[in-house]
Length: 142
Image 1 (cartoon, one colour):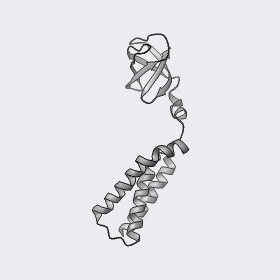
Image 2: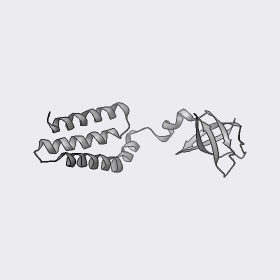
Image 3: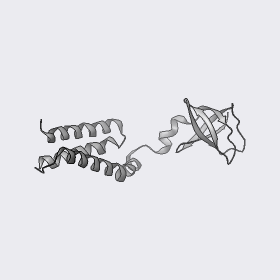
Image 4: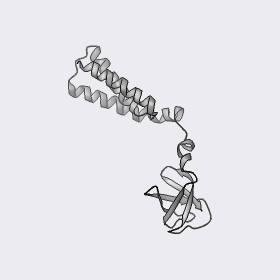
């Protein structure tokens, strides 16, 4: 099988996979593969190493330059992505107080936690997730 057919098929499959998963990540791998296939189809002589370098460069540039913008336009908002966590219980493992972060255990993993409440929460207490901000879980007393 010709290299352009392999790159082209891989590119199409990767883009279809991204349509199914909606990550706006795999599609850039697909774009890199399709561009590599197009160059080969146009008759540009490329060694195997050059093919892989073009694939890697196009994929990386796409992710770095375009993914964030596409996620803003078409992806779920932060509120929608983190809605499933709101109201869930966590176990405080390191004291969390106003203005001072601590740690909580959630789904078997320790997370950095903070609170907008005026009360201190001590290790061993249960708390409720109010929202997430990046990798910080905001909590309130249960």
